[in-house]
Image (cartoon, rainbow, N blue to C red):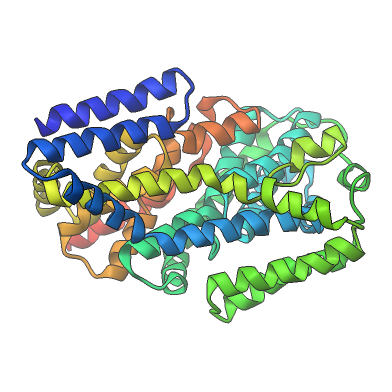
Length: 431
């Protein structure tokens, strides 16, 4: 019966994708399925609802952080922080190293903002626009953008996925980031090498887009607008609590928005709630977004996914799959088992959040230290989910920058990292 329930859940996810519906409908359908499964196992409704709610309460801190991230990303737009970063960074781009710089610039923005979707919607769109003027193949641009967007999504102190992993594993996010940096070095350098070679041999001609002139229609481009980003960088380096660091950055952005950008109080409050909306069409394409409402969708996904965890434990729905995973771990390595599970979870979950939570749920019995388990989650579920063609984790960013799905093949960092870890654990086992 458990396989039938899981099959129906997967069918619901696939149907939502085919009909282009929000994944929330499939997750809500899944919650109903799992509640009825629990009822069939003899549990009372009250007990099941209480169990589901307990799962949601375990991630209450991260929900608060999500709201802060929404405010932060809006304020960085209103204060001109993101436009100034983009304008200054774009001066580093040269045609011969365009792909490499596309990767590096998206790495930088995603590390600062902690969001892959936000990065692709800003720096990703800008790189795609400049790439079009240089006649660079969108296939290459999409791969470089996606790799860079998920570099920071994995290891930024304000990343929702990194915060989710630290919450699930009850580990310290800054310790996790330190460990993630070590495993990222080799894949990062290999990715840089690949994009350098591809950039040299790919054709390019045309003029670069004058971003300062474009953003100058809406903003005062001044170095002072960099302060909110510098504040969060410094406080993160000092290992200050993420919520405090974000609150300090938001507080720094407010006077800059008023004094430098001449934003009115009403417009600022509206941006905080619903996100920034530029009057200029070209600027709007590259910069609109942020705000508390932008985080409601991901918060809903996390809440529904979190409600599953307690139900899975109580009803034993995943016990059979867990046993198979443990056997894979015994024959290979714990990371190899998590690698396979992450691919399965990404294919079933169709989004990064559910892939992470399913992998966590299925692999908890592998008896690893919490810090090691957190690292393995980051190096598997977080980066493998975007490689699933029908997952919104990869499909949405590629659609945003106008790249084909085949660009997943050139998202080098996303598969070099888990393959590097997998090879390392297998070699260590043989020794």
